[in-house]
Image (cartoon, rainbow, N blue to C red):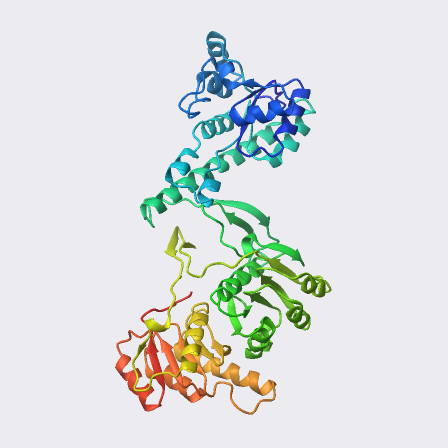
Length: 528
């Protein structure tokens, strides 16, 4: 292997034609003979670049509607032949095969076809065959051949060619990228085909992602981390991973994790403006209101101490009225589907504040998979897209909840879905008034939520308990009556819980004795 490898003949066949004409002109100016196919050949010709059709090079026409055009010994022999082996050079001479030193290929737009709603036949026709074969062949023979699959690498390629040829270091890097390119492509196809079959858990699963950002560190400074975008063949879910950052410092691993939790939570509420404030992946305040400002004020009141340095997520475009209020509190991140110009101007004074815009809200009912690594394996499960409505509720106590209680029960249960288990959520008037998260026992979660609510009220100079007359939601059943009675002592008047405990009758009897209304959902929302 020589380090610098000149390029005398190149094959260009790309779906993404970004920079193709400029690349073709630059290569032609260096005396490189250009081979190409179909649309790439036309694009080069229209740009005034002399190009030879692959069919003319092979002496064999494209057939089967273009399915077979580069699958030919004159192509693959020219790519795969090792220039340091006399037997390979002899075979090339015997069969009239000319070497191909550079392959520039990216693949049929399969993922884009799926994301655009293409039917089965359209998606199948956009599965590339000849492209991956050429990419893998050139990558395998990177000792002699340069493979380029990403238009962002054109400049690096041209810079090295201007010095007489590509270096082995560049060829190895591009070969590694090429295999990742075909692996992600095949991953998208296999995932899509499994989805078409209705197969949630196929015999093998592959995950593919595109690097968006190498992070300063992970959850802790001694850990390394990076952000990847999902490469699956489906429309990308709106959220923090693909959001546009309008201002602020670089996002950290914890910022990304917490902001994702905040935006997914606030997406649960579509009917009215809603705000979620998150700290360490748990909500410290969630509320609905007639306006974003009204919702924010109620959400902040739940736990203003924890909100300091937190994440604020909105389900409506950020307006100036709320932006003015947000400038009064130290926040790490604000995320919204849109940001009005005046609001952006107001927040620009907070230079370190990260402001993200997603362009849309995620659908809380959308199906999909979540992944968690464990030692030696990977846990897959369907996303918790469960949604409880009024018709799903079963009244199990003598007293049924009032309309106001019912609305707050459903609100609290939606919030509880996004709180780490064990979870207790106190709510009143479309806002959380106390949250107990991540406790080892449910009764402790109920106590902590009440304590935090009382402390927030006292700090605000209130004499009445905020939990007086509230409702309470539990993410899973009460195993004993103690947790429910703790909530009743805090002032809760109505309860929503999944039910299903061996002691349900005991818990129901305790609720009746305390004069509580209680409904069962039949659905739990563990979150670990």
